[in-house]
Image 1 (cartoon, rainbow, N blue to C red):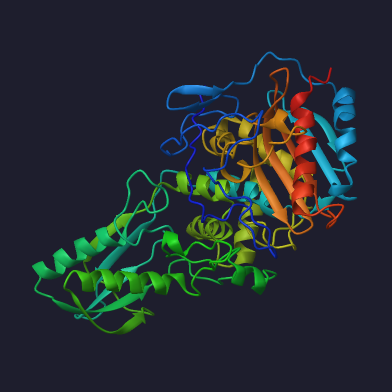
Image 2 (tube, one colour):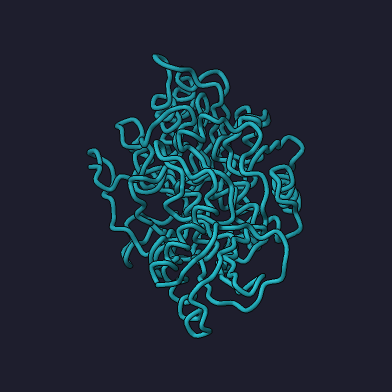
Length: 481
């Protein structure tokens, strides 16, 4: 089957797998960057769509043209000894430090071809988002949309903005083909202003109902400095896309209230008088709906969260889906729900410790073997068209998302275009998890984790990432018979 990779052009302001404690935009999808010699050309961005019938083994197709080949389903499986020999040198790179795990698995058969120290739990960083993506994709309708609405009440002179989980609203008009900014406050204000005019209500008080799924804004263990730097924002059920945290531009302390104030301004611009301060709804019955806007489909929003490694967005999506299935809106309850979804799929979770859904907390530790086991669920018929599509649409080395500027050196370019992976980076931690097509055309799944990487001059973020890429490129470049 043909895989259409939704290559969304994210602005330079997006924080892509940035490193907590370091102010950088080195991981951003900068479309002005010039690929190095040997890197595949960057195709034009395709219109994003909801995951459908794509497959992790299919080619990358942009505007109807296959720009990367599909896997060869009859290619030979790499030999274990030859594969181990190919990665032995890259694994000894001092920039990886003393704690490195690697798993290579055949996609077609599910056979584990190579496992190096894969049972020891390690800090996963943002590769933990793979667990969250599976939990969501395996249990929720990926075509579902988050509703933001306005209703009359609870008092006769009040209207209430009701949060429904959309944290990517546009301040102005929505863009139907977009993920961020799919729904817009201007469109909602137009509807409400018309209804108020029709009912002869030129003056109202505005109330915010943000009770749905409301819980702690920050996970235990998240560093205040990281929040202030804009490496993550508060977990919320209502926000503008422009509120997304990026390095150097942190989120508002209360994105839901900031969104309500923006909606108030939109009403005033439409000649509606809004009296008194903004209030929060604690109790009371609401009346008729005055307007509504809907987000992009859940699957598209989740794909964006993976592509941009957006911590707050990932947490918000996990909480929204988990709470709808009976979990409490707390980090402990949501992570317990994620572990429950993994266990229900047959993944051993005794050694899986999750402190959050995004991988930002260093208190999370998982074995590489368990991460590989979750990736392998993409093979199963029950998950192929949901979770499998998310894995097929992970960022492509040298082309998209957090992988845009990876695999572009002479030592790593063998992986450019053929590696699709979720990145993970914290200070002292580097990880990759995804799929690749090797030199013989065989589709493989892989996980590589290093959680004791040294600082400069031996290591440092860039050196450790490059060393990790060299390991994966070694797998991609060898037939390994």
